[in-house]
Image 1 (cartoon, rainbow, N blue to C red):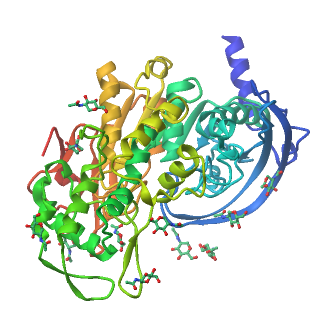
Image 2: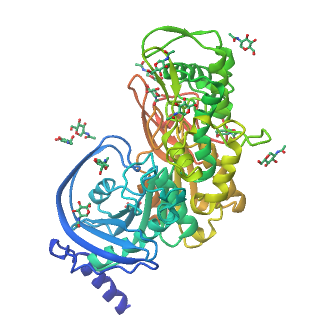
Image 3: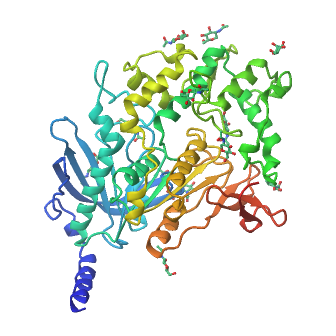
Length: 527
Ligand SMILES: *[C@@H]1O[C@H](CO)[C@@H](O)[C@H](O)[C@H]1NC(C)=O
Ligand SMILES: *[C@@H]1O[C@H](CO)[C@@H](O)[C@H](O)[C@H]1NC(C)=O
Ligand SMILES: *[C@@H]1O[C@H](CO)[C@@H](O)[C@H](O)[C@H]1NC(C)=O
Ligand SMILES: *[C@@H]1O[C@H](CO)[C@@H](O)[C@H](O)[C@H]1NC(C)=O
Ligand SMILES: *[C@@H]1O[C@H](CO)[C@@H](O)[C@H](O)[C@H]1NC(C)=O
Ligand SMILES: *[C@@H]1O[C@H](CO)[C@@H](O)[C@H](O)[C@H]1NC(C)=O
Ligand SMILES: *[C@@H]1O[C@H](CO)[C@@H](O)[C@H](O)[C@H]1NC(C)=O
Ligand SMILES: *[C@@H]1O[C@H](CO)[C@@H](O)[C@H](O)[C@H]1NC(C)=O
Ligand SMILES: *[C@@H]1O[C@H](CO)[C@@H](O)[C@H](O)[C@H]1NC(C)=O
Ligand SMILES: *[C@@H]1O[C@H](CO)[C@@H](O)[C@H](O)[C@H]1NC(C)=O
Ligand SMILES: *[C@@H]1O[C@H](CO)[C@@H](O)[C@H](O)[C@H]1NC(C)=O
Ligand SMILES: *[C@@H]1O[C@H](CO)[C@@H](O)[C@H](O)[C@H]1NC(C)=O
């Protein structure tokens, strides 16, 4: 008992020991990172760092921030590979909440320095990494993908896929412990998209790293959804028709008009996309107003064909479904961008992330012209992607037993109108986890947000503070029955709230009450 009190006193004393003066490279111990060699550690105060976050960013809300913190830069290499990975740990000097937070990246970028600012502001000690790429180009891996002509830089790909995320966690915890004189009480991960994949990867491969993980719109099943992202471009090339964006937008508007009410409430949002059987052939010959120039135009046969194939998703060699498409009601502008010239000609554009994957990692030629990929070639490229990269980038191992056994908790949320990563893939992963462990809901819950795009955007309900919900689960044992009071703005500006229900349940309008209020909805097994 005496020892326990002593321990508590020491840890309390140590907890408050950090000062501006302890923010030096001499005062902070060099971390030990197994398999890596730390090449430098520099530390200094950053005072009044300002950043204005305008949209959802790594699950942080829009906010204007000014923070002061101890910035610790740690460089490391994995001897023999020639890499040099830069990591940053941002430490609040006063008001540390005793918690360590790992922050993920997006697209081909492994981390985010600016996303550390909201963490520090909330009292977290936080870490992120550049995975040795230096590049801040989330859409294109060309600057680092190839070590030489035709030769993928497997070491940097491994750094990006998993190794650097584990390393930054190990070194981040060590730096945090050295700075404050006590270890973090809890460790969390927060990320969306690539950041969501990295969180999943931690749960699957390094289950001891984090007590809790927010893995939003996770880019798992990389070798399924990346080819599926390239599919709309391939469809437009093979059909010889690229709809102007205003035509896609008009299709979307017609789809929403047809399917909005299927969830029991007409609110401009398709909450039951699985019930939406809207057939774009019904549009052929009908007129629409092009919102970019106000002209009146007609939907064509080609429009219907292209839209149907995009919604269907890519096919295998025998014609069965290879992967899901985007759900009805989802914006086409991300995965099926097109450019219209002043002479009226419209051409398809590739989606940059999947196109970069094809050029660099499949064709191993950054200049490869992906316009000429045929329907017949497509399945073989998907197969190649699986063969070469599942073990590195796949991140879809449904066995979370080690994470569960260490008491870990994980939350996923994703927009049903996700314009980059097909939500059905995330549901499929969740189903696979549930098939292995029917008690999945005791440690992992997923929430799908009607009308929300990739990591945010759209007119749907974006959850407000997932990290706090996760902390309540980990620290207090309060499992989130719903993700609370997600807010949304209707197209007309009305503010609405609605709770998100844990998959596979859905949030359904009770049939009475103000549809702008969360209390008018309940979690049901289906619509
Ligand atoms: C950390 O690295 C960043 C980016 O290179 C640099 O701007 C900053 O001054 C560095 N801070 C320290 C403490 O070395
Ligand atoms: C950030 O917002 C503040 C107001 O909160 C404003 O004074 C400042 O100019 C903004 N900075 C930028 C870069 O927009
Ligand atoms: C941030 O500051 C800008 C002015 O630079 C302002 O327009 C915006 O509303 C502020 N955002 C928030 C979330 O306070
Ligand atoms: C990305 O890096 C380039 C070149 O270093 C720089 O000019 C640009 O401002 C950076 N962009 C962002 C968003 O950090
Ligand atoms: C705004 O849109 C919402 C959802 O479509 C609708 O319920 C509400 O009545 C609209 N409000 C006004 C003032 O038009
Ligand atoms: C995709 O998800 C929706 C919404 O949960 C569901 O209704 C639909 O059946 C799923 N589609 C496929 C092909 O699994
Ligand atoms: C559209 O396709 C249908 C069925 O293939 C065909 O009968 C019709 O002539 C086509 N219309 C146009 C305008 O090409
Ligand atoms: C079609 O191919 C897929 C794999 O590419 C396979 O899983 C499926 O069983 C095949 N279906 C038929 C009908 O042969
Ligand atoms: C329209 O303009 C584009 C871009 O300048 C050009 O490539 C294309 O050949 C033109 N098409 C026609 C039919 O003139
Ligand atoms: C790629 O191929 C397409 C179709 O053959 C052609 O129109 C386009 O100009 C090519 N792009 C480049 C950059 O060569
Ligand atoms: C969808 O994309 C179009 C551009 O094609 C844009 O005008 C519109 O605001 C987007 N809608 C949503 C909900 O993101
Ligand atoms: C745990 O519960 C206590 C008491 O209700 C509350 O004050 C605290 O904020 C909760 N902690 C978390 C992380 O939710």
